[in-house]
Image 1: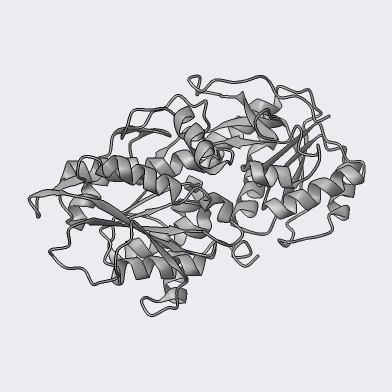
Image 2: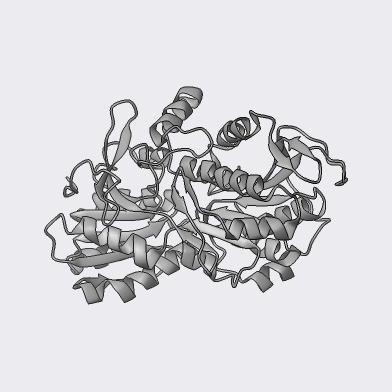
Amino acid sequence: MKTEKKKGITRRDFIKKTGVAGAALGAAALVPSVGRKAFAAKRDYILIGRPNPATGPIAAFGEATPWVDNRALDEINRAGGIYIKEYGKKVPVKIKIMDTESDPTKAAEVASRLILHDKIDLMVVYHTPATVNPVTSICERYKMPCISLENPVEMWLTGGPYHWAFHAFWLVVEDVFPAYMGMWEQVETNKVVGIIAGNDTDGVSFAEGSQKLLPPKGYKVIDPGRFPLGNQDFSAVINTYKNENVEILFGNLIPPDCATAWRQCRRMGFKPKIATIGRATLFPSAVEAIGGDLPLGLSSEIWWSPHHPFKSSLAGYGCRTICDDWSAASGKQWTQTIGFKYAGYEIAADVLRRVQTLDREKIREGIAATDLDTMVGHIKYNKQNFSRTPVVAGQWVKGKEFPWDIKTCYNGDHKNIPTEGKLFPIP
């Protein structure tokens, strides 16, 4: 797992490693198709760059691309596009999508290519620190306005301070951990928590957060330490959990490690009352891959769902509509990334409509002034260039239309997001 083994890298580290143009890049997709000619003043479209993990270990995050991209573009361009003063007319928006292969160094190379070779007007990027951090770092270097989402805020801030990049997502400390603990309180336990996390940026951050945040709330933390990604033998850590009478298993894993670890837990007779595994259990396909009835009762954070009460600023429909349309078009279940993918284009369109120019500094100022209701909630950036989005917590249960569904169990301060029942102990 090349991408997941990379630890947090600073902006300076990325620049040293990647350089700029001339790197060999993988296949690129353009939505709609355009040539690779150098930028000209008479170019009759607005070009947005979209680094995307189409392949590799975090490819599930990019699955709904380009379906969402095309949908948003159709809505933005329906009336002829966006008015740009330099052209004296409306021009359409186009997107250049390039595969990062789920690799941070590749993501930085792709970002450089989009800025220097393709001459994009704006960058929009999503999908975990492995994509967002290197891309926003490159945008800072080349003074490219950048809208990013889908990366815990604390991890994004490690590359700051930011001037050109603006981010929207939740905070681990202030948002996710309270959601976890609020959900856990719905089941009576001994409050002994066993940490299971890999030796990558997400795993280390969640483990460190557990050590700091859980004990003051009355939880005893049992942490056997980090393990290499792709680990095949969890017997030692499972025996530690059993010996310490762990009743809450809490971790942050990539999907293959989660499946391996959870199967071994059940084979070895370790049955915690609660198992909350971040990242690995976000996607229904990853949950189903665990096999049989083993996923029943697993829990996770929920970034976005069909039940969220938000509406599109581009077309007025709600979260349920875009989820149903995705399922009808693809035959697949909705995923939490769909709303955030769509929201990135809502923000971009709103900014461009307000500034009516392709001047980079004006676009940057326009992003900073954003005050918009989107598919993932209200976006208004603070002095650190980020906007918090709501996150709740839920549990996987047997589905009706699809094998598994996640139900919201705890909504904390976000009472406008409905719950669908309380957390139950793992059978």
